Image (tube, rainbow, N blue to C red; front, side, top):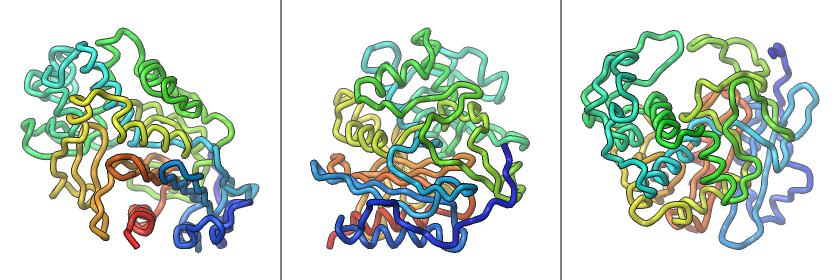
Length: 351
């Protein structure tokens, strides 16, 4: 559904019932207010958890441009590429079970697939290289000609193709769907009731913020329109999931704390390759579905982010998972990486 000429909020009220002064995060609330001021985006939320203390939730802007409804806790939103952390966890769980290895080739499980569709040699690409984006396979962008594949191991190339192939391997190995594997291996054990991988045409569960975009086709900006009901199943294993702030905290804490994978697979997940020179997120190293990011203050965090039509999400924490921050913006215009970086730097900077 497209709703053109929707108003953009010029103010940025905090969520009802949230007193940033009383809860101790006035600087975080100030950054949220700034993020949506002057039409920078519809609405933004951030949730902070530190150990066993009560979580802090802050918000600014709106969940619905038509009604002015404010953003609130418990909303479902699309998490984009943070889906890769879930897909990587499932693959590593299967490795722990002995169902496959990280050194298995794509050709073993998907014979002829990359040869036919990408002109690459599947016998030279391992599962590990899919997960750390060193397969040499290019990113798939709609309506653009796919560049030729490079030799595996040459450099980091962030690519949705890698994770959609990994999802296909999961389904081939297990005989079930990736959605079911995420549900049984991650969502159910952790009690993530708001986390799921939608199928084609599935809409967001209630409650949810409306999702807004200025992008109609790649590289072509249009007026702000509502993309909440858009079918984004093409993102699938690389970026198709939906979650909530509280669920992402629970997942991130469990993942960082070693509660989801045995030690050997945990070590594999957090072994990174350099992303330098890739024109990707600065100051990062990429593991197997997660990445490290060194903040301007010098602290290194772990987790991931996601950008998809109508939604931008960031979920990061310290290496032990004792302190985490999750944020979501229900719009996709402007470069909000600096906003998320500022939120992280402000919260995690030692004072």
